[in-house]
Length: 98
Image 1 (cartoon, rainbow, N blue to C red):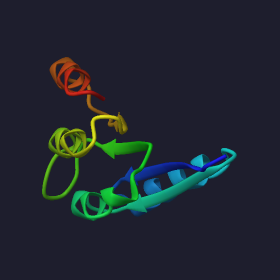
Image 2 (image 1 turned 180 degrees about the vertical axis):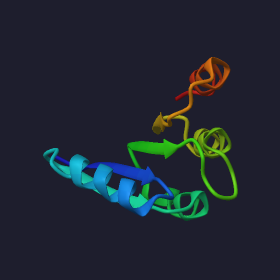
Image 3 (image 1 turned 60 degrees about the vertical axis):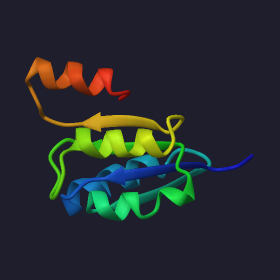
Image 4 (image 1 turned 135 degrees about the horizontal axis):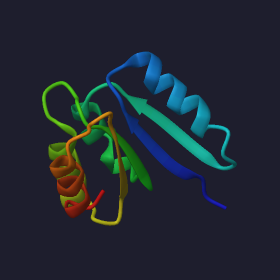
C-alpha cells in the first residue's frame, strides 16, 4: 500500500513540528513540513494527498495558497488550520475547497 503523502504548511517551527510528529503516528503516512507557501508550491510535483495549511502565512495567506494548490490539482485535499474566528473567512475557505 502506498504511503499517504501529507504536507504541512506552518510558519511556526514548533507548531509545525508538533503537527508533523502527531501525523507521523498514522500508519503509512509520509509527512513533510514546509515553513513557507513557496516551499510547498515548489514541491507540489511530489503529489501530496493532503495539505494542512495555516491561514496566516508569510507572503500569502492560506486562502491564496489553497487556490494555487487547487489550480494545480483539484484532487488534493486541503485542511485550513487557524485560530480565525471570523465566520466569513471560514465560509470563504469552505467555498474554495478546504
